[in-house]
Image 1 (cartoon, rainbow, N blue to C red):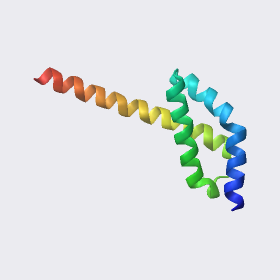
Image 2: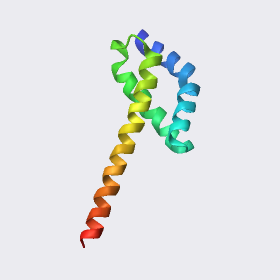
Image 3: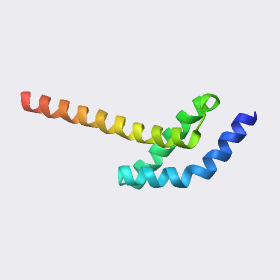
Length: 86
């Protein structure tokens, strides 16, 4: 169980930095909180394999944001195309 305790300690220490980065990316408090939560959930699943948790968390946060933004754009584009086809 030491791994879980290590993760919890890491998360408590890093949430403020992750939140600031997420807020700068998203520009919205709620979206930033969701990004941090999703990032930490993903981090916990792979915690036992990570060599540099802080770098991994920052990279995962940015990738989560980019992936979500790209998915949102795909949905918006598909919606615009279907609205224009009708």
